[in-house]
Length: 193
Image (cartoon, rainbow, N blue to C red; front, side):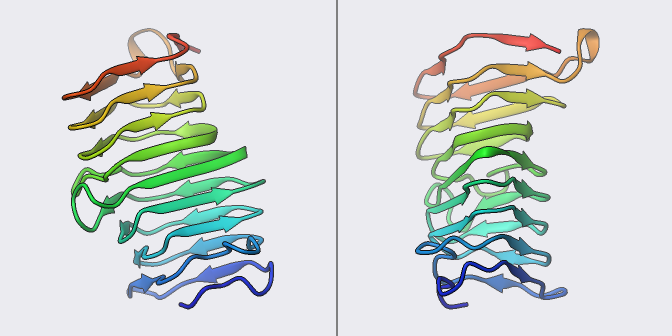
């Protein structure tokens, strides 16, 4: 698809059992109202920006360093996210007034360069692996299952609180492995609801 900046409309893409390849940024000049991808997808773009929701159901292979932002909606991924080339492509997410939901592992089959969440409330969180840069989580996180984060050559940092959705023996466990760099908990609070 060429760049989509002419009108601030929503964009829904479905290719059945095929692959969707986006070769340029989406909504970079004028954010779209919304963006939905409903089939197998190779995400080849520098950005997706909307004023409303972003929903991506199929697995994603990042083919560039990518930024995905919803200025007033939610961002939802239903499946896993991997780099095309291990340790080369990174991902930054931002949803200033919305939620971010990760439905599948990030970088488990092919590690990302880096993974950053700049804003938004994280309501679903999965394992994350990077192999060239840091994992940086600015908003608060609620864990509904055990999560492992691994950065082989960058640090891991949390600026907000980390909470477990459940308490007691059912509480989620967060495991962080930063092979060569520090782990930083700016708030330093891990609680159970």
